[in-house]
Image (cartoon, rainbow, N blue to C red; front, side):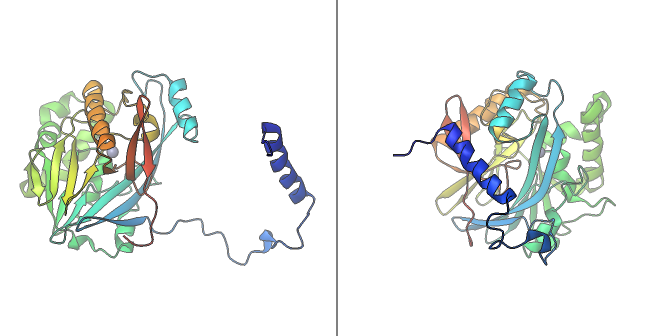
Length: 330
Ligand SMILES: [Zn+2]
């Protein structure tokens, strides 16, 4: 039996590189410099469909936000530990890739959109949601209900265009009551500073002039048949997750309970600064990860790599994401 050692592994790669440099095999390979087709420099549509019982689900990709990691980003882990976790996932150091994927649920009686993307108002590498909705064959006015998990801009900005027009013109908008109470409170706004202050102003921009049309739900309530809200506080004061149930099948929509899985599923106790109440967010995260892994539940999570859907397994003190396998039809 041949034994592969680091040096034979290296020589395998070196041999191939040397052959390429020497032009060995060039007669049989196409000359890439003369390809007739130009580089496309774009992906195909970010749309992924799957079924849950009698529901049809569509993951709609909005983009990715490459957020530089500042010192103190995780309150209880240093930059070296964070970079080690990124390296283990083959990601670059000092940058957090925040993928954004909204979820459209066709229950058979209602078309429900859970969170709405960034509308291109956060970073130039996100804002594809409406193009992907179009690629999925859905017109915005076909959406019956928009359900919001929490009031961070990457979740609510898609409700309106930059000019302030409503995007989902016929949809009822449902938001968590404690989230509304916190972000729409002028005394809280007056006390807020920095990024959080901007989030308050943004929430006001989105919701103030449509306040009368917004339905506020109590987390824990069933919002529509088969769509149950779950209090998941900590990330924000009213942050909400969801359980979908159809024909005996269930799925957990985790919202922002776990953001990047390679950092915060693997290290559930880490407290990033974007969790407003770090300790409460850890409790919520641990509870939800434990449930998802123990029950082998299908999960979707807004910031997981596209299509933001898979399973979580317990691995030592943390959890491992096992993404779904792309399939040609739901
Ligand atoms: Zn988010």
